[in-house]
Length: 125
Image: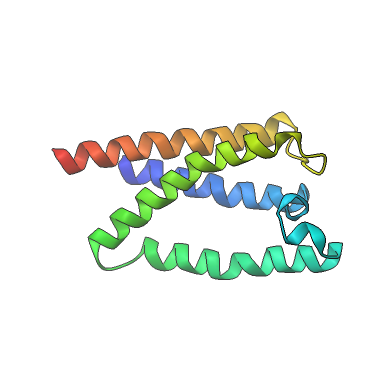
């Protein structure tokens, strides 16, 4: 059950990244927002290659402690990510205004929180 919650959160994150392309998320990132549109888009997409590679590499890491801390970090990011979207909600370039996008972002944070709690319960059991 614990792994399923984590995989759900990770799936939501990947889904959010697909939505982020539609919503031009690079326009609200410091640094990327100053580049030309086509360049910002390409950099945004290319940066996801090493990011997804690291996710997949650590997801299957042979050492349990590395997988544990990787999952804790992802869970923490899922929660912090909600806060980041809250901070940037008033940015005029923010296109994450639809209920669908907000639902994915909130559900990501919820699964991250639930998974952290489950990990801590199992570790202390």
